[in-house]
Image 1: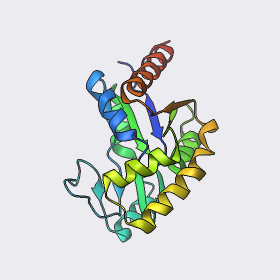
Image 2: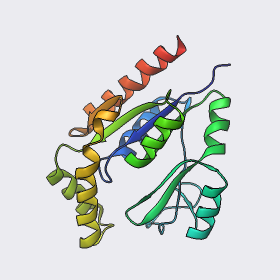
Image 3: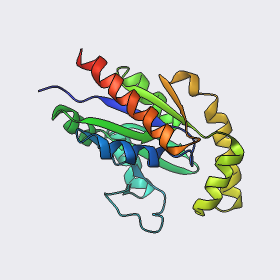
Length: 190
């Protein structure tokens, strides 16, 4: 049985990573989305263990110090991390695992697992990103400014990724992400 592969999908908050990944997961039954841990409060409709593992800061730091995260970082004032055990178990069972993480975390994964395929999802412009974030309605004005500043800074990191997908038109961006997945799956199958 083959070992699964690790795909990292990163980019600014609001770039559409989750939407693109959801479409990819529908098409490829041998792929799994890793559920991240976070210290941020759940948004309406989010469920613990489904969307995130919601932890308090003390528990998160204890797990980080114990080496239980593949990567972790502080983003927008909250801690986020990828539980290592779930990713390793799925890969050992032959599933391809997709991480939807921030740019800082992607850098840590590149260092620890250089064989991981990395994809940067970029919005077509900061103006479009701001519009998407406002439509989402989950950030106050101060948080909005912080996310836009971070997005500008994170975009400078895109050259460190294997691929860049500009999420300007959903159908095209999904097709591009799926093409990357298929290409890398064939390449890694040897």
